[in-house]
Amino acid sequence: MNDNNPKEIKNIEHRIESWLIPTGNLFVSLFHRIALFAIGAATVWAAGMSFFEMMQKPYASV
Image (cartoon, rainbow, N blue to C red; front, side):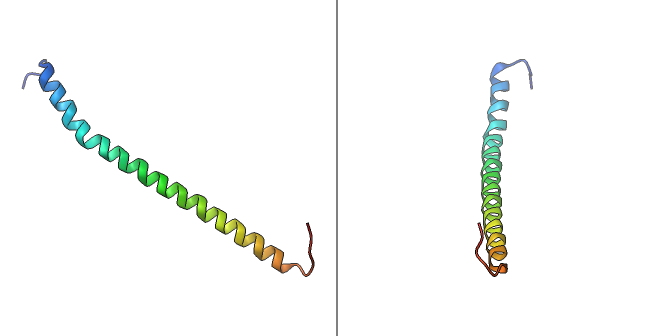
């Protein structure tokens, strides 16, 4: 294989990109799902803790 041939270099780049781009898209999608789950879990946890603290008091307060 001649490394100086631009057609061969473009072919190699195309083969690498053909699996690299979908893999990158998969990682981005997974990160988004994990981040959204973490945000949702933190919101539910904070609401639950606040509700628990409010129910512990025998009186209303601000």
